[in-house]
Image (tube, rainbow, N blue to C red; front, side, top):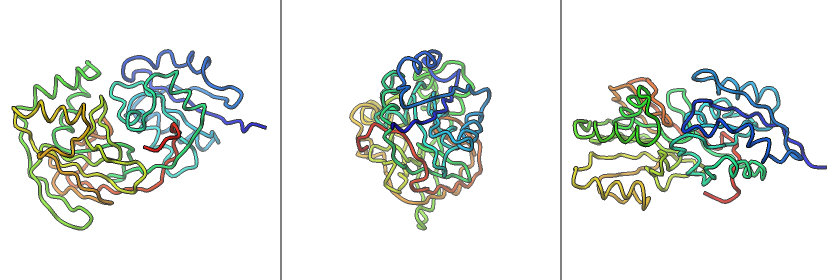
Amino acid sequence: MTDHKRLLVIINPISGVGRQKTIEKVFAEHLDRSRFDYDIRYTERAGHATDIAREGSAQGYDAVIAVGGDGSINEVAKGLIGTDTTMGIIPCGSGNGMARHMRLPLTPEKAIEVINTYHTERIDTIDVNGHSYVSIAGVGFDAFVARRFRLTKKRGFAGYARIMFTEYPRYKAKEYRMIIDGKECSHKALMVSVANSSQFGFNAAIAPTASLTDGLLDVCIVEKVPYLELPITAEMLLMSHNFEKSEHVEIIQAKEVTILNNDYRWINYDGEALKLDTELHFKIVPKSLNVICHGEKE
């Protein structure tokens, strides 16, 4: 007898580029109903997906499926970390960094085929000052852009790009004091990202060698790149995915890192702007979340 599983599908109705609006029809047509039953819930506010995911886990759903972008995925993950409930992903955001890192299909129909296989794996997550995330958080220019982006109505890559190109010339690099696995250091940087996966989204691989399962976080220290070198650096970030080879980038793998002087207080938190403290403590939480993946190693 086939093991029948119950899925709770959480949809962010305003995420990304609008593909989530057809998701009910796509689930009805493509989910293997001989193996799965499902219910659908829509989020109504920021943080609602976390509450729904926790409720779903407590109610005995086998998996909770996040339909949306990286922010939505992170919210669902926060409700499932440390439980036996599995998370699935239907990417419907604009950047889809987590889905790209996991090499998941970016169309709902194909992504549901991955759900149908129900191949699962436990992955690491990262905790920063009591806030969990699955992909990338950081300080500096990316946090500045994330905060500006949350105030704009223009979504997608065009919105991000407009802010980046407008603000980059006048944004000043900062001296960041850090403690990385117990060793104190200082780096002048445009931004410092603490990554569990490789992708910011939009195919921008800030940490090309990052792994969700290696028990390490990747501390990506990025200097401000001279204007004439920006095309070369952008190609390394977006196309060839060898950003770590740039002379303006240093990546350090560690289990814990503390940033001592985040005076701006805002961080880029899986694509969303989050206001935290001036001192930030990041630590890896190994094998803390079960996810549905395509069955191939990262």
